[in-house]
Length: 139
Image (cartoon, rainbow, N blue to C red; front, side, top):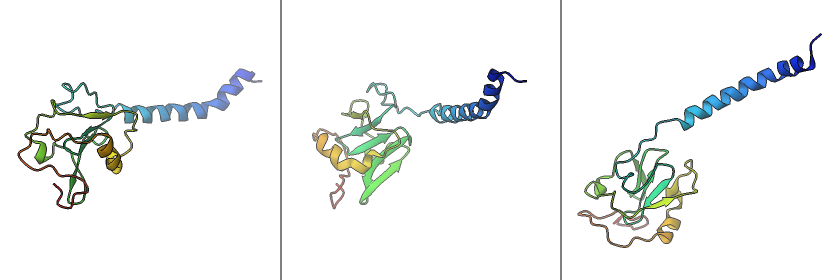
């Protein structure tokens, strides 16, 4: 005859396996190597949140590992710095770290909110025009 403890353990065994499998799956997702941009250290940024560059209407999305910027009437993703920002020192640029926003979300979907909350100050030093969301000409 089995003890109650043995019986309980046998009944819990399948659930323990499921919990362990789920923990392994979560670990794989969260332990994924996050690419940290070259400007991050100077900005005290640790890739734990989205970043908005208000003077350039551009987002950095650490979950996707790249930049979102306005191009031809919609936001475009690029894993590398967009061409219009190539000569900009992003380590000295004004940024807004969007804390509290899930990394699963896409901040570009709420760009009108961020444009109002963090307006461009016009101090961007670019040799090319900055694409501006909602501007028919794009610049």
